[in-house]
Length: 97
Length: 202
Image (cartoon, rainbow over all chains, first blue to last red):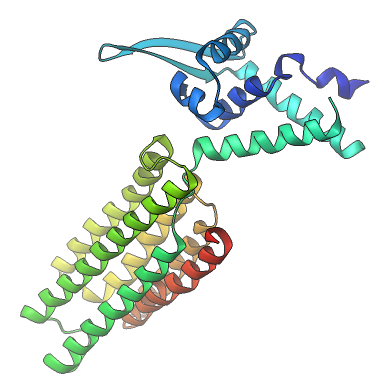
């Protein structure tokens, strides 16, 4: 079934879906913004961003703002395309039943 | 996952996209009040020009002109102040931060056309082309609303379109500027503000 193949296992989690949703409509988001919006703990969010980074769906940039380290994330072209496919597959699934 | 889970996912995605990119705690009531200020200001200006100068609306001179400018500035100041106070209150109630990425973006995108328009109006006034300013204010305010609507409640773009159309009409028909200004800044604000109030604030 072609619909099932478009459902992306990597997005099969609330937090990962959330990270991608935020990065689809924002050029960048930093760690604390994501944490607040998603209501996730540091460790939890870090493990999910790592998984998305490994798949090259998001880009991680570490920089310093003054003396504070700041990590910001952006969605890659690949990540955006995969997310769109995933959403379309979800919509089709819902419409079918 | 069941169908219901997928539906929940989609609504969560929508919610996060909105929350992370739009500042939605604008208060409808502040729109209504801004409209009332505009009507009061226009009434004062009208009375000043009719009663205190030589009877025609378009001959401004001396203190009448400066009093009208002062009234206009007061209308803008009070509207901004009311907007800030009521929006802060609403943001608190919605548990939305008043000063974060989304509200900053909203303000910048609103202010760029507005400030440019304001400066342009001052230049036009300085050249003595008073009849143009009503229309110009409407046009630039409308553009500011359209540009801000991407970062806030999308509905305000329709108010923006209306203001732009009113502004263009005002520019085409010299002499209609004052009355269209009242329509755009006074009456439209009251109608739109109450509509927003009943749609979003209750």
